[in-house]
Length: 206
Length: 205
Image (cartoon, rainbow over all chains, first blue to last red; front, side, top):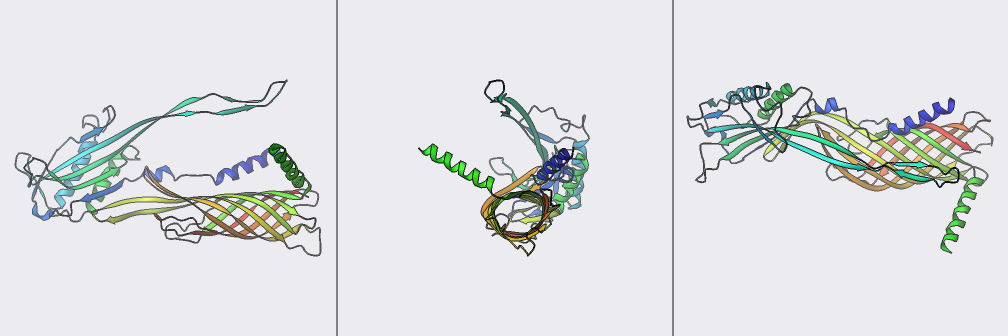
């Protein structure tokens, strides 16, 4: 009994120093907010914008049957769009209809990256020599399948005032917020992230 | 012929080790980083060191051995905004250093008048290599830079025999680690720490 207690203590101490990773709740309780902007853009030269009311885009490499896709199945699109609108309005831009020649277009979408990967595992089981047989390693390979779903909420401000001859629009500002597939509270973390995206981009102002 | 020579050598080493007084130890290792503490300055209680040492000579004044240690340093950094040339990134994050070290070491024991004293203080030096994985975790993302370096570890400690009839003992050590393990990404030109260890030893004498 004493030996078992000692052995357990030793194994415990040995494992104590192994490679622990951070607490996942603490890691995932807020989204990473990354913003980029066109340094040549003069955000003061625009006055109006247009954006969707209840739909956000979804770009995925997986079968697109996700609950954050449409307002019908999720409160996510409207929650996100309302918070984006509130922030743009706070920057003194005026919302107009799509057909009223807005200066800026606001794109909101989720990019989903679905990865499926497999790993073949060869466990080794050693049985010792007994009754005249040779000891041997006994391998039973098996396959582990992992699925990883990752995604970012993306906001874009595009320039509709200066559309080029080739009909292409210039992206003035982009915000990536992730990961939206591993959240503690998706709606709250997304709205907090949207606020942060505008907070760290004070140049977006009329 | 070559196989025969190896066999003789192994037999010789085993006989030597069997004949020598030795000890095996397992220590809990607490470490305080001393380098680039702005990046990671928190004390780590997640460390383990194991080793095997053989006394040279019957006086138990010198020993030589091998040590392996592994430690995880970790520190949480609250939300911060990093300005970049054309944008910014905001996140909270964890800085980690996963450390693994191997040393060959030698010790000198300060033996007093009482040759059978249950306390055996010593000073030693370990030289070897160590690997540091400098890692940053933020949300689901992770960045890592792995670096190997030369490791020098002076230490001072004491072995305590629990009772004269038992081969189990206790060990306490203070040590200083200096490693040339670099990280350009995280601004380490070297890595050093001080540590304190306590643990148990199994004595063969």
